[in-house]
Structures are given as structure tokens and as C-alpha cells.
Amino acid sequence: MTFDVTTQFSVSARGIKPSPIREMFHMLRTPGMISFAGGMPAPEVFPVDEFAAGASILREQGRDILQYGTTEGYPPLMDFLCSWMAPRLGRTPSRDEILITTGSSQVCDLLIRATVDRGDYVVTEEPTFLGNTINMYNQGAKFITVPCDADGMMVDLLPEKLDAVLAAGGKVRFIYTIPNFHNPSGVTLSVERRKKLVEIAKRYGLIILEDDPYGNVRFEGEDLPTIYSLDSDGHVLYAGSFSKILAPGTRVGWCIGPAALVRTMAVFKQGVDTSTSIVAQALVWKYCSSGALDAFLPKIIDNYRRKRDLMEGALRKYMPKGEAEWVTPHGGFFYWVTTPHVDAAELFKKCVARKVAFVVGSPFYPNGGGEHSFRMCFTFATPEQMDAGIRTLGECVRELLPVAAK
Ligand SMILES: Cc1ncc(COP(=O)(O)O)c(C=O)c1O
Image 1 (tube, protein in one colour):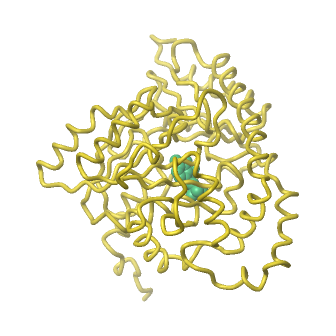
Image 2: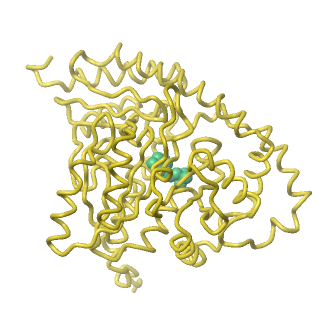
Image 3: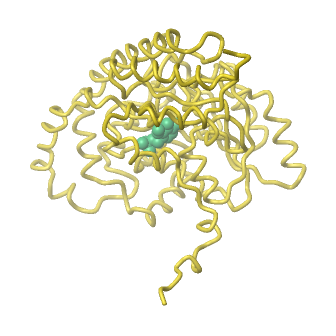
């Protein structure tokens, strides 16, 4: 008789949820599918030639970089990041405050391992990036969710929610926020609220995970101070990634934060993957340290700003008037669209049958909700796909409107 391996599963594995986005990846590869689903960079802008030229590092340093490396990271890349990040962090971190990770998703994973016991609470925005909250859920976390408006997390609502959980004996471990060009809502946390969030972290003794893969992809307006730079007491763990500013296939991310936390996360990482690929880190370093990253950023910003404008124009043109709401993002990758009279799951079925895909809203709500919203990524589709796909989307919304709203 075949052994039922599931009898050996852990409590976590028995309740495990997959990421709806990653599960969609196969479907998105169907020929002819127009995808606004995955948060994918535009492949036409990848710096393929420059990266290929940087592969000369294999000849220059092959005997080192083909060997096992230290868990904390490839030292030249750690040093590069400490100085490249300094203006945004307000200081130059030291080597013991940085950890190179396998994508910035691993930052969240290691922070959960380092802080969360089953049943502990994490504070998140509502909606929020489901890749990370699914990992939190799979490792036994519960959620305190705080709604967002056009200025990001409504932090004034947080103390009351924290008090309620603490009064009931719950433990709250960290606040997870995506301050710039939020995934999925596209909004940016105001400076006022960043300061308040730091005050709350201090008052309640919490860590803030500042997840910032989009902070360097700003189309207009001034950069806002990082939450990290507004804190002087070691509450903030800043997470960065090369996925959206260079290439996600590198799987190189990083975090910068209090040395004691970074050290503990590094110890967990030893058991998870020994280190992030040293070859990938060396290639990224070779590219960045030549000044190529700083020269590349304006190119992607330009490309994505044009695509954002195309999506804005197409949404205005094709969505039925008064039946769709969104906040125009000033950077990043996403539109978050709300259709008050149309269920996003119904809309998804209709659109996918016509070869247009997006991500429905509800998985972005860890405690439920979001049935009338969906996420649209504008960086990946071509201009032609953008127009055709959003025309189809608009038609499908119209077909699903209740008679009274038509
Ligand atoms: C807010 C946010 N955090 C983290 C990640 C994960 O990025 P990485 O590819 O660096 O793991 C993403 C990717 O979409 C994201 O949107």
C-alpha cells in the first residue's frame, strides 16, 4: 500500500496555503494571454548586454565566487549597499547591520522565524502584499489589519487595535509596511504617518519591517524619508530588493537593521540556504559598482512612467463611468481598482476566458475582504496589450454590472 506521507505533516503544513499569484504563473504563460497579474518588470529593459559583460567576473574571481561564501553576503556587495543606501537611510550602516538575502521575500521569512511563535500577531496594512502575508500565515501568525487610504496605512487606528489584542493576552511582534508605491494599492505613506508609526513602535516595543522594493521607482514628486531614517532607537528593519530595479531572476535582496536582529536572522539563514548564490551576488555587484545601476534607474523610471500613463488613459477610456475607482500611483508597478458593483472573482472568470488576467483583491486581505477590488500591474504588458486588455476588462465590467447600474 502506498504510504500516506501527509500523515507526517506538521501543523503548519496541514493548513498551508499556496500563493494565488505563483499558482497562476502556468496559466499566464498560455499563448495569447494578456497579463496584468504578476508584478513583473518589463523584460525589454533588462540590461542583458551589460550583465553579460559583467560575467567576466567569473574569470577574475571564479576561484572565490564558485566556492561556498559567508551567509551574511558577498562582502563587496554588502559594502556597496551600505554606501548606496546611506543617503536614504540617513547614515552608513556597518557590516554587522546588513544581510544579503535570497530576494527580499526572504527578509520577511527570516524575520518571522526570528520573532513569531504560533498564534502571535503581526500588524499589516489592508490590503497588503500577499506573498509575505501567506508566509506569515503558513508559519502560524495572526493578523491585526489596518485599512489604507490615499496616504497609506491609517496609523491613527492602530493603537486601539493593539490595545485590544494586548488586553486579551495576545503578543504582537512586528508591523509590516510597504511605505512607497504600495503593493497592491499603489499609495505612499505620508511623512506624518511614518513619524507616527515610529512613535507607536516605540510606545509598544515593536519592530517595523519597512519593505521597500519600489522606493527607487518614483515617477514624480519628492522622495520621502525612509521610516528607518526617522527612528533613532533601532526599531526598524529595512528590506530592499534588486527584483524591481534590476532583475528578479538574480534573486538578490537585502535587509539593514539592528545588529542583534540581523545576526539572529543570519543564523536562521544558515539552515535555510547557507547563503544567497555568491555567483548571483558577484554579478550584481559587478554591474552596480560600475555605476550602471544609477544609470539604469532613469531608464526604467521613464519606461514605467509611460506605461503608467497608458494604463491611466486606458482605464479612463474603457471603464464604465462612475463604476471603477483608483488612486493614480506616483511610482511602482500597480493600480488597485475597485468596482463597487462588480465582484472581482466573477470579473476574473470572465476576463480570463477572454485571455486577460489580473489578481483579484481578496487574497490581499489577510482577515478577509477586498471582494470588489483587483490589482493591475502596468510594467509588464506592451502598449498594444494594455489597450486591448483594458478594453476587454471594461467590456466585462459592463456585462457584470447589475441592471440598475448599467
Ligand atoms: C512589497 C513586496 N515585497 C517583497 C517582494 C518580493 O520581492 P523579491 O523578488 O525581492 O523576493 C515583492 C515582490 O513582488 C513585493 O511586491
